[in-house]
Length: 192
Image 1 (cartoon, rainbow, N blue to C red):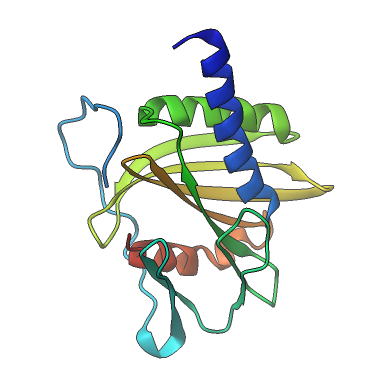
Image 2: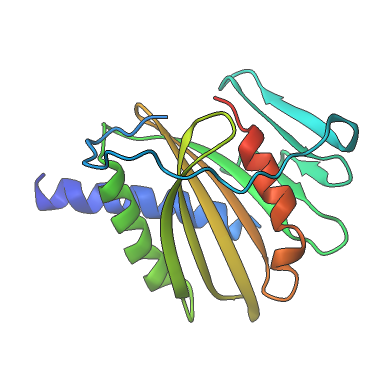
C-alpha cells in the first residue's frame, strides 16, 4: 500500500473510532489462529427487561435495557443507548471500509490513533471472543480522560466483508462496572 493510501486509511479508521468514542463474522484478513476464541461472558437481557432495536437498512438488531434511553440523533452514530441514572452508554456505528483491510491492520491503526487523541490513554487490552450468536468480535478495552473526566471504554469490533460494526460501551471509571453486564448482554444479542 502506498504511503498516501495508508495514511488515508489510517485517518479514515481513526475518525470512525473517535466519532464513536466522543459520541458518548468474519475477518477481511487472514488469521493464523486455529483455536476457537472464548465466549463473551454469558450475560443476557431478558425479554421482559429489554427492548429490541432493529435497523432494517443495515439488517441489524440487538436487545437493550428497557430503562435506558435511545438516541438516534447523534451525528455519525446509528444509535446511542444511554443509562439515564449515570449516563453510561453504548454507541453503535457502522462503517463501510474503502476496501477489504485486514483486521490486524484496523486494530493497530485504531490503537495508534486512540493513543494520540485520548489524554492519559492506558490499560489497553485487545482480545478475541465469540458472542452468543457465534459472531467473532475483537474487543479493545482502555481508559483515559475526556473533557476532564476519567473514563473507561470497551469497544466491540465486528467485521463483515467491508463493513465494520463498532459497539462502544463508555462510562466513568467509578460507574463503568455497574453496567458492564448490560453492555455484554447487548453485545451478545447483536445480529447482522
